[in-house]
Amino acid sequence: MKKRQVVLKSGRSSSTSSSVIRNVRYGECQKNHAANIGGYAVDGCREFMASGDDATNGALTCAACGCHRNFHRREVETEVVCEYTPPN
Image 1 (cartoon, rainbow, N blue to C red):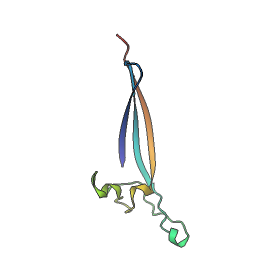
Image 2: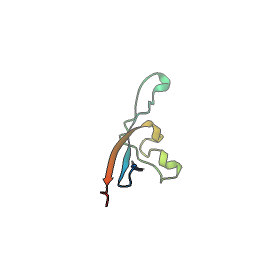
Image 3: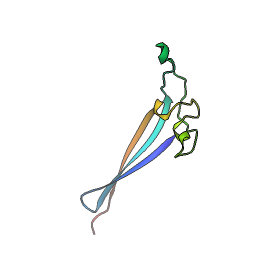
Image 4: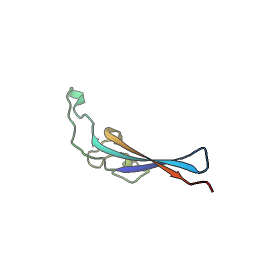
């Protein structure tokens, strides 16, 4: 599942502005299913897939393994885009 967050920042002068684009992806599940017996075992789920639409409780539950989204490794890609407009 990929989410995209855009943050706009204005420079001090009116001719420059920059925006930061963050792409968030949730990777493999890291929940330890054998923690109660002192072991370590993961279920092998490779990527978070929401089991419902956004703004529902199913959006935070993985359709493949049934775990909450917080158990999946979060990967954030940040891209800074600078836009320059020369003064007139």
